[in-house]
Image (cartoon, rainbow, N blue to C red):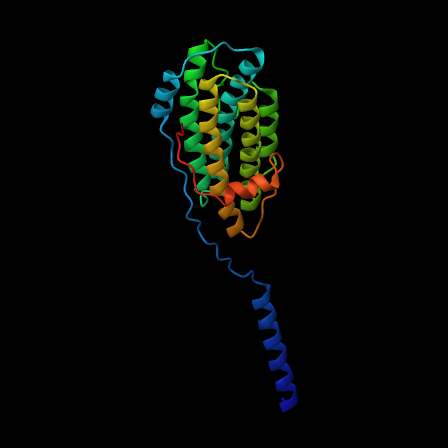
Length: 229
């Protein structure tokens, strides 16, 4: 074999080896965020609620109670499902555990006002058709991407914050406002916890239901202590 042919063959082999190396995806280094979600104290919330005087309910307040009760179950069921798909993202489990606490804490509202609990026992089943449609759409989309899952979770927290703010503005009952402020603080903490995960995976979240300025205010402020007075 001539020297020139040997050099040519060696060049081809080197080029093939280089191409094969380039075809392999680079390992992605993901920094594990340090923001964690503390599980709230349901007994403390219930104790403070029971010390606040009861007031009459109107139809709007009753509708908000029923919707927000199921919204906490939605938050739990959704994030449990997301954690089942992405067990390397513990933030979903933390959010689900906090939501479970508020599902229990909220029961004092139902008991005080004699409202039947709208929650269905089955996971992913909701009496509210809007929540049911949202859950089916989120889960059936096929959340194989960690980024999609993180953004789905953030989108619900975004919505939940807006819903809670509206419910607070629609009632003058101090006991309801107290519970809703607890949940609002918890959802803001959830957003604070999700944001660094989204950033770590190379993404950004743009809010849909709250303003961009309010979202930036939330993620740039410290974790809130729950329960709050």
